Image 1 (spheres, rainbow, N blue to C red):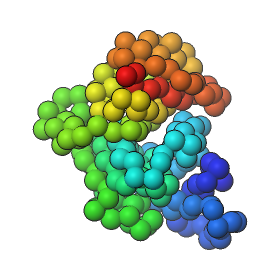
Image 2: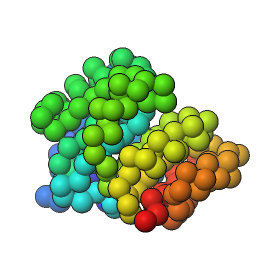
Image 3: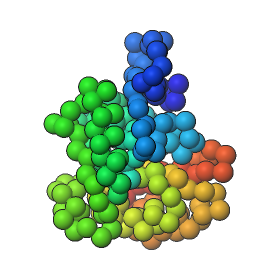
Length: 200
């Protein structure tokens, strides 16, 4: 079991629910990153479990296998946009969504670099979001911080991980400079997950 509500199960394993409240997230990671076993993914999933509310819209920057955005959808999010620089991730994220009964009516996966692709940014920026996630690496999170802040509605939460312990202070400084308040830092071995909020 990965979080309080969500159990991530690879498709090749037979698994039966332990309770009615448990939500199964079926995954076939393929060649994209994200099975739920890495501390960074697990910490992000814990935050998503705690924060996603029925009807939320979510953006996942650097989606890999799609695990974070799909988790948000099975926890009650209305819709999600997932973005990755790797075209393989688009195929795999859609396949993983389908494994969980989620179609393109609720789930949009886009390929490209939000830092350089203005057409891609326009598609995502059509509205503001209560939750944005990014489980990537510290240097990319630092570069993404102003954009993540732009995507968030007031009081919206930025869930980010993939941060090695030695770069925690740099990431905190970048998020703060982008107008985000640090609410909590979680630690999993050498890794950090940061929960930040857009200040009103």
